[in-house]
Length: 136
Image 1 (cartoon, helix red, strand yellow):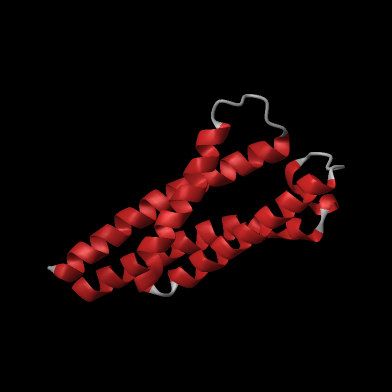
Image 2 (cartoon, rainbow, N blue to C red; image 1 turned 90 degrees about the vertical axis):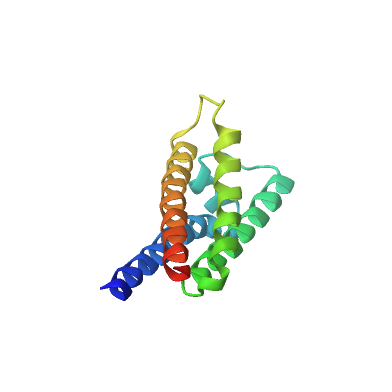
């Protein structure tokens, strides 16, 4: 019975990383250019420098999302993956919290990051449980 419960918790940890990874991969389509960035964030992007910065941001989110997916299946990477995802999610939520005039697309990003935060908290709790169980 003990190995089965531990296996279910390990799968839960992986599932939480997969959800957070997918959320972080969603902005990757922004690398395609200003049209896609406009769809993602509901803003007009006429400034080429801003488009460049947001496209680069899309690449970085893609890298983080890919790392989270990789870590879902490589337990040794999971603590680092959770830490990186917490930095990403909490920094956006912290920066966005005082702003009360989101457009619908940015509000969707806020909600997605709040969902990711819940997954990360649950995943870290499950990972801690698995590690305690394994060390006992």
